[in-house]
Image 1: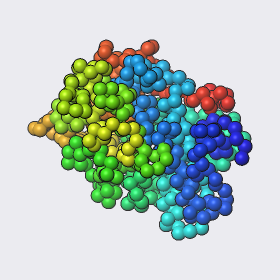
Image 2 (image 1 turned 90 degrees about the vertical axis):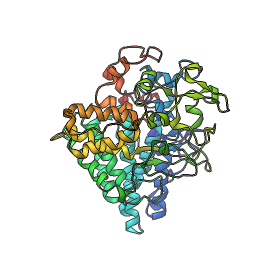
Image 3 (image 1 turned 60 degrees about the vertical axis):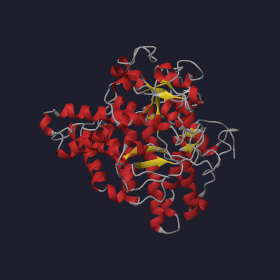
Image 4 (image 1 turned 180 degrees about the vertical axis):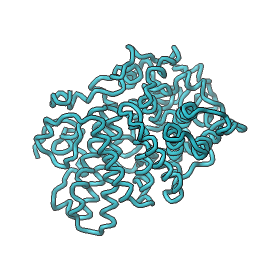
Length: 491
């Protein structure tokens, strides 16, 4: 096989790079004979999942995706040290060689390549049709999921549907977000009809997962850059399907917020997990590095990669959710110091601590890519912004999240409070900020609502500041240099 480093997805399709791509051959050796068997098709699907989960190289079981979303107002990083890649996002000066965004980019295209092989061949595969349809449904989900992350990060991107290498890929042009979203919607629609109601294992999607992500995609399409406001009604309807059938799909709101982030390696999944990418310490490069060191302060043996912005922490409503979200005293022994006396003088995120305060960067814990409360907030916001405004179910959905997180005795919102539809929608967006702090969610809300500039203008002066005025050009990252240096059509 000719070995020449081309660019992310071309390298996956037909090339290798010593000590990086060459070693990960899972899912690469596809051919008509292999893909004609059910086992071969399953192997190709395994290759797609592998693209989403490589501990230090690419995907989502290390903190690269977290780093790429810290232009929001909930997370920041160390102002010095070796955090240059992290600071580029927080200061809106992302380079084309940034390894954090490049890791997500490479991983998603690896996953897409594996998914394409399944999608383009499953109709000819010999085996049990019901199982083959599930394999294909998972492939459609993975491809839609991956393109959803890519277009939100990069905007105009190469849209690759081939599973095999051809020289045409060396001159491929970028597709618009509208074109990419059309494929995403089509893929997730196929996935919701082909996937079973019960996941094959915790790290796979089911029909409810596809519906939940489709609802989120519709909500995003209704905002910037597409501004297809008719999608609000579609988002609400699809989210309601998930809510109405949550027991069938195995989704549930956990009784307390602290239970959501117990982070016990012995627990494979939690009821709130709509879709997760599992990490395992037993396999090479498959442990999760998003927990532990990356979010712990130096005083506890951590790396100071990500911690809370000051104004976000200070304005966070008191209650069990705030207690379980933040770490405000540091020290692994009996002696503790308050965050104000720490080296960075910031609170940290308790959410990413491992049960028992284990100091490590390799753990068998999942990266949960969507939790069930997200579905509740999708319905509430989309219903408010769509036809007719918020109904009682929208208020009930918001209150489930709000009342679990705030202090005992918090008043439930009701239509009697006299909120306009817009005011109610803003309540939902703010509630989502509190609920999903440091979970790679806030950045995308600020983008679709065009509030990135306002959120950063409200930063504490003691946090990192943008180094130049923010414009819409900063909403997307430039494609990685590994691609643009080879193909001028991607500049």
